[in-house]
Image (cartoon, rainbow, N blue to C red):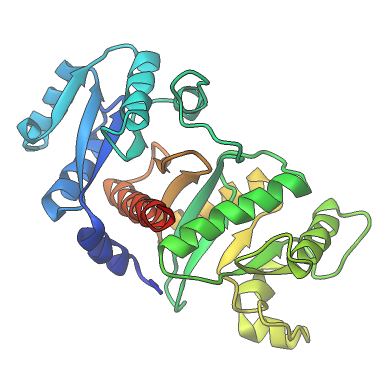
Length: 309
């Protein structure tokens, strides 16, 4: 099981290279990240966007832009459509968001004609490494689903399990994060946590061990769980942190980055291919880490298809 970001990059070197289609690629951090991915042998990239701006950014940052295929498309909507179409046609295995609003690229992903939509809910999974912990955390959902109900939360868990599996965690522990550890009829998130636990126990939600409601402290700290008398296996040992709604997920994501100075990566799951999606404020290192996870996910998907075949 992968427990550190350095391992993610190292193993993605063994699994790669894959090809990324970057939508609206005229962004300094994005170009630095894909250049690092190329130099490390993780991924090649097709850059879709304003070629003049892409070349200028590359020149200013000493990036060997001639190592990349560039598709000149100045219209952001069309650039997203082109990047998604490249993946749908098999010319690339991963989509990456560049300098464009998330809604624009997701509209292309969900296009019925050429997009990458499936029957599944799309959700964002943030992979986080925090000093002092012996494992990676999978935080979901911090960027897409605003106030998911139980049915959507079930699929959000399943998507996060896919990411954990791709990183070698075959049976992740899921904590349904709430403000309290007991079911309270006045607190919707605790009722939904109880329902998800029952689904897991009934075999309707498989591939993981679900517990909740749990507060953040007793989900990640064995000492906090012991102090509150919570003895079940997930308490203090959670891998996946299912957040109750988007604000909670988003605040935790950014707290890890700006307060804890932790490592983080972001990816959208539920489409036919991984979608590398990070905040525009994130560094090139965060984007590189996200690319590496996308490579591992694409590789896992190919292995599963080969096995099924």
